[in-house]
Image 1 (tube, rainbow, N blue to C red):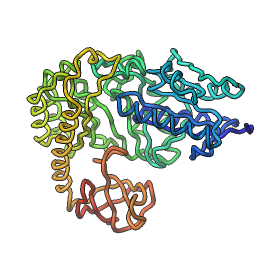
Image 2: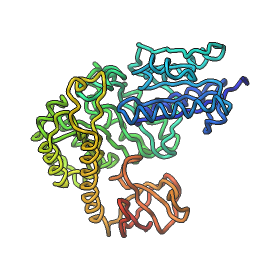
Image 3: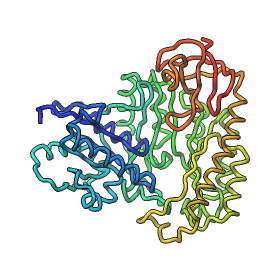
Image 4: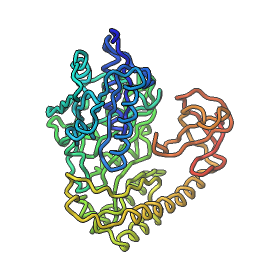
Length: 448
């Protein structure tokens, strides 16, 4: 091996996992012994940061590991590292089934990535090394190599989760709630802004729980008040606010603060009281309806994204129709629909997985088709308006068009604004007149 080793990081799963990968990249970038590579076939070391949340994510992680292992046979790769949720969940199984892997480590390893790679330098063992850390960082100040874009980034407020939803394995993989200090979060946000970021997207397993484990008065509202004071921050967006804990002061801040996007991700999962109880969600349909009605009333032009789950154990056709009729009311702007995955280690695993896979897929397709009609109608109402749009670059299908997003569209999960007229720099904000829609995208031209 040369003195400087090239490292390629593959990040799978959620935005929280992506931030872990960015922290690893930042640490490696600051170490003279390592250099980041964009190409797996050129790398001396490949790190796969896995997801292990549901069946599809687990399979994607396995396929990715096997693909990376090909670079040990046919490329430059000398060491293959597997980290993240899948390896936290199944370390021994991965060791037994994937001899190509050199190191298996878990979700608490990202702050220690340099020392972990150093331990591999002189290793000649052909057997995978397993090192799962039990000590988890509560607060940290780590370098980051933002990979979302030059102008947009995630800011992870907390690790772990205080909730115990019956279908979710995350508390076992990530531990209990550990909120970072307001000071460290503001410092990280300021660094991102200094490096050109204009949109910060707040993430955690549950933003509304932020600070509840601390004794220094940290709350989501107090953090928001600090963040909006950062001079060159343009947009601040909130992901994953739970409907039963969204406080009055946070609602007021979203309503009144110009920098906070009128956009909330509120995962409700279901609307049937029976299913919500079985999910251990600690909320009911009356509370969900009341909160959504209040949000729409108090925050003009608010866009709401949610996550729904179909096929949970015991979900009858009647339960599903109740959910479908709720979606049909058009209260939600963006909807992600997941089919229930029967995961060992979760409380719901004890329940019979009694909804056939084909029925789950059919219910998912029905909700998506219904929501497409609603979103199409909502987008059509924007035709003729002039919206402020964050310019993100060239359209993926043609260099003749630009693409961007307005405040009602979040990165990676929502659709785009296609810009047919005008020129603008990536990362700039421009007024765009909306003239049409194309599928689920808005179409317009720059007017200033």
